[in-house]
Amino acid sequence: MVRQGIREGSPGLHVKQVATAIWSAWALLLTASEARAGAVMAEVSAGGSMRTWALLSDVELHKDETFLTLGYTGARMESDTALSHQLSVGVDHALSEHWLLSGLVNGGLPKTSTTALAPARPLLGLPALSARTGYSSLGVQLAAAYDSAGFSDMEYGLDLLGLGLTRYGLRRQVFTREDRQDATLFRQEEPLFLARPSLGARLLLFDK
Image (cartoon, rainbow, N blue to C red; front, side, top):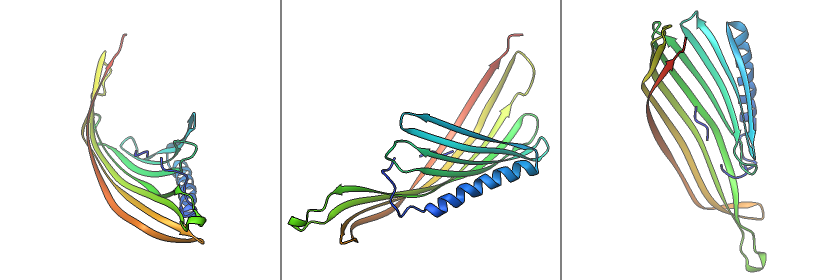
């Protein structure tokens, strides 16, 4: 999953969308796990000013072959940064005892944050100056894996053909505020694309 601080979020943050997405994820995870064989796991971690929490579900669609994975991750990296929220859905399919194909789609909900750059100076006729930044993300991950899946003293696995593609929507704006009115001085929106290939191997040694 993609886990992405930007300073304290502005009131313009899509609060209702975030709340709806989180509650929808909760309901989906619980409903899916009850309807079919599966499990739901909640995880919370904290350290210093960092806080993260996650909900994960693994639902069996076809016995011992196809599994649906659902997840939600929330994070606050510092006490004065805005929250980030990410939802994901994926499928794992076992082609045989040794080969596994998997795919995952994840999206980071839009987040907008505002940072004060300079206070207003009425005596000099200068308004307050602020910067507004925002981003969202959408990505897909594909992978094929091989596992020896035996019971010998040495077993191994290979993660092959792994590829992650992510698009980030980045927004930047500098504006002045006077009498509760904003005047834009600079605005730019641009996409950022990230491709991440991966290759891995694991070796298990048993002492019987």
